[in-house]
Image (cartoon, rainbow, N blue to C red; front, side):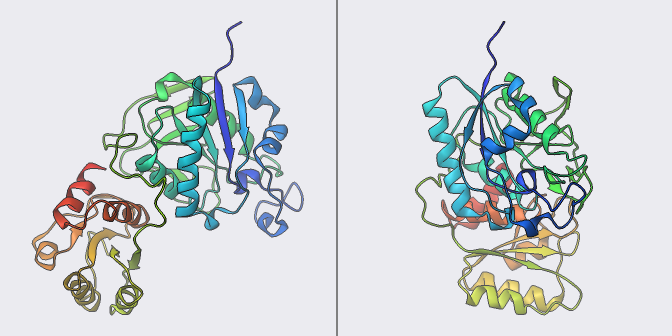
Length: 333
């Protein structure tokens, strides 16, 4: 019998690791403060070890709102260490809370220096809940990470039997199992039982081989997101600039507009040397680089959501502060 592929499983906490008050608790489980580490999650899903020879990797067990740059850097380093320590590693699975899963996935997709597939997985219901999706999501993620066809596709996100690209996917529902969607383009593939099937590729570049190396970076440049709404007068923009923001992402009204007061504040930020990128709160679609934006010195986020535009802008600022260079990065990644 052929040996099972070797897959590392890193647990960072989140719903997939959480224990609720009882089996019917699918809403208030975070209040228990009980989250399992990677080994304990695997003990609850014994089927996982029939898929792969799993290396359980201790990390930390926190709710995903507590995860940010420090954890991205630690995970980037950890993935590199695992790939070096296990030359036969088929892939890496990272368990993560769904609240910021898409941000961690995109940050890692831009910064990882490993060749093996890295798959992010989460759950909408705690592992202790009746009809939890945690176990089957984990099995699907392990199958995806172990499949040779997953190589070269960047960081992948697997939930609800669907494989999505880190750059494209976003959480669209608070509680539904089909929450992770790619609005403009759809899934990359699907996991049906033991079969991992791909139907398309994401075209934008990703790691390894990007200019974004965070493994020894102490911090990212400060980049904030300003959310546009009727009568927004730029107060938030001015506060972010006063706090030291080096970059700003405007989550504008579709197709990439802001009320007059907000627009004036963004133009003043550009004049003060802040790099401003225009995104949209709509959730899909490309922000066109219109004459109005160009005249104000504001760049287009392409079709990135505001939270992902923030990540790319922060990483871009570690490489260059030239608006032309930043524009090229948004067209590339």
